[in-house]
Image 1 (tube, each protein chain N blue to C red):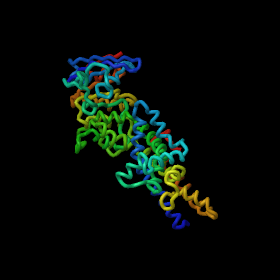
Image 2 (cartoon, rainbow over the protein chains, first blue to last red):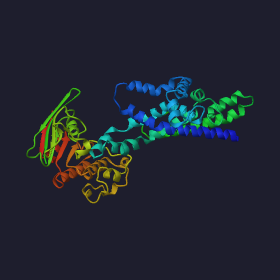
Image 3 (cartoon, rainbow over the protein chains, first blue to last red):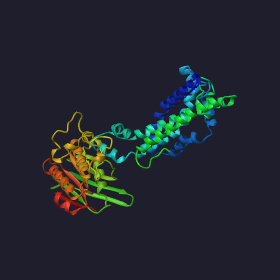
Length: 229
Length: 203
């Protein structure tokens, strides 16, 4: 059984993952749409930039975020001036780091689903009197839903597992930024912390497995040949 | 209402050119675009529907310019009833939802589609329909969108003989009873002979 402290860690992780996904979803869908349907100079570069967090060492991503959101950073200064808030050492910062790290996987799943939508159906809808906006809301979006959900679930799982960028960006603050992986790391640094590490690791594995299975099932609903795994 | 078309379009190495002047047999009934595969018959329909932009020329239907002279009316405002070669039914909508997709808000199916014999299919999903049923639903969907004219792209292809006869009769009904001008593509001489009031050879 989990201790109250461990339950707190699990709930914080779920909160960070949920907020990260809420932030990521619209951005990821817009990027996925542009990459799936757009033809413009620099598309390859945009594609590479979106996927960058997947291949760059997470500590680098965390450091870049730290520089950007520091009190005098390009993002931190206006946030402080306009809203009087800072995300440093706070769970909102952990959610931001998780969102950035989850973006490539989320975009990838959504892009596949948008590419899988038969554009001949969209043409048929246009000839039936639907303008571009109506075609998007009534044809493209509903047919992309399995991929959007798959991307969201996958991104959520990635967010919960985020470690390197989070610890670099917002440190390892109990109750604020100590999510599951950071708590496991902390437990392993303490004598006698193995039992806690085991329990939290078990929960991490179970959550990740459930998310992967769910996203794969959703991706398969998009049709033959589409897999997240 | 008559078709007045002058179209040129290069797609890859294929040069598509068609001139169809208004005249007897073009204003009413069915004008058949007849020719072998690959000469651009479907591309002509796409240009009339606004789905493909011609390199030059004009598209006029019933005296109204849909393309040319600086005009390019978007597909959703052309009121072209386009029945594609494949039914293109929306897989996430039941037959009823498909039929009413292009209909005015609040419209009902009523008895206008009785001649298609699809009244018993309304609650079915498109994936459960046979080829002939799907084709008739596609025709019904187009008719409920209140088209000014019809574009039919090989509407009888890949149907067995009984289903072909059903759809053939539906096209004759639209031509003779509903009196909708039809521009239809086929490479089947028998279809061209039976349905066409004028046959235009391409290629």
